[in-house]
Image (cartoon, rainbow, N blue to C red):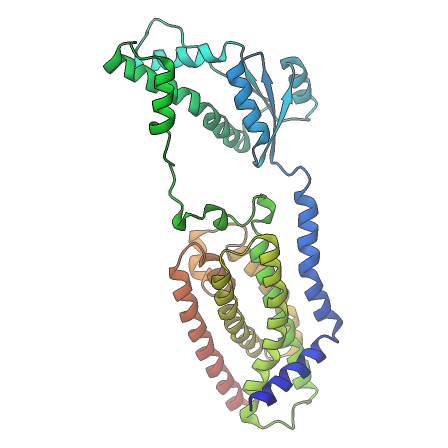
Length: 381
């Protein structure tokens, strides 16, 4: 029996690979990844920021750090403020950050005024920010600036606190720096589960973030296309020779053939692009995804009842899943709708272990609904 199903799988696979539309679906996967790779290698920042240093060594270190950092904000070094402002006027950049020559003194003065060490001291602005307009993206970019200034400001605040409360200026700056670097700044603010923060990001470039969800939708598209081929074969009465009891199994082998082909290409893509979290988790999730996707596509075929309605419904369904499933953004308000579609569980499971359990439950439910829908259609016919 197993050998018969294997032969059936190979024959159906050979038949599917002769269909131009199915080949196009398979080719979409590497083409999409290759295209995104080309785009990601170019400048892909959402905000362009000019960095100007008027001669401060401390500011030079901050600017070097920002210029070498991977970020959705693109940083450019400018020699003087005038040339940066000209670039701002010409729309070549979106903002200018000017670090003054006395940057270190200004940080110290700001900290002194903040801690009450020298209330008479003038607390000048540390960095000058010049923008054409104030929008959400530029507000987000200023958070990057706050992060860059944090290290210098936090050390100065720490130094003032020690001098005011304990040492009264008797401790050397080198001693304070040594203690601060080895103790105060030795931990991390965030705790990444399993110690693998990079594994949860799905790539360093933000353009790759939705790629995983889009590829999963292409796998489902392959299954839906196979369900359309199967409906066409039913209408042509190609399977009239088959006993009624075997048609349910035959249909699902038919759909699994397309889903497995697409899934193998997608899995290779996940591992090649670094989108895979853990090998064992990806394999388990893809297995459950294929099985639930098979029943999902079978249910859609039974609901639509005709080839024309199925062909019309497939693009609408793909668009709905693209919007509702957490491919680009997770909207809690749509959670109940998201749970109707298999990609949701696959995308959420790596960051929430409960969704793996939900995925298995979803598989059982789709199998039950598929069987009941099959019985209903058999009774009606």
